[in-house]
Image 1 (cartoon, rainbow, N blue to C red):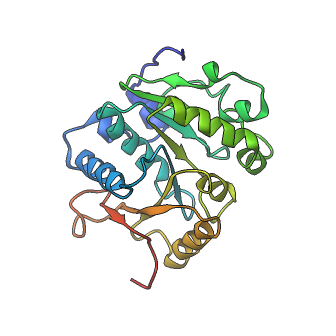
Image 2 (cartoon, rainbow, N blue to C red):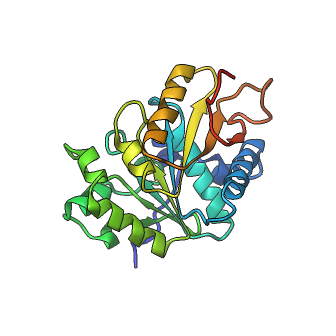
Length: 243
């Protein structure tokens, strides 16, 4: 149905984000991502998670690296997974997976492209990607449209899990719009970089749209405080107090 698998080489990974779960699946870091996946699965027992938004409080906090690697671990379980690059301001998925960004999410929402041309299979079994497409002048309006809601329903019918790489919460409203429609939302929080007040504000913005906040992932943790570079997954709400 969709485009043929593209080669995933070292050059594409340098230009995009690192996929340690693909390049070094037996490493401690890759195991940390599998732990993240398991904890997310157990965070929702009563309802199957079909769509998950990954976001952060500010730019350059590792949300794309985390979301892509967690997606790989789900695909390794035999789940049919689709990564949707909904960061239509700073997209990275097309570079990471070495696919064209000529047609993607923005085209589908603007009705200027087909689903077949917007989705690419990857060399990783069970993992497909939808790049952002050309950067539009009105990302928030497109993501908040009825077309986005209908598209998400269509994608969750076809895939076991849709992982949405969203822009930072505190920067633009895109993540709020997406989180309100997804089954769950994860905040990526880099140790020593994320501002506590900023993370707390991001949580409040997500709560304002009644997003189902599954928890936060502490990444870039130091060796002294974590068994892996990307840290672990913390269930429940993040930033409910001053801890």
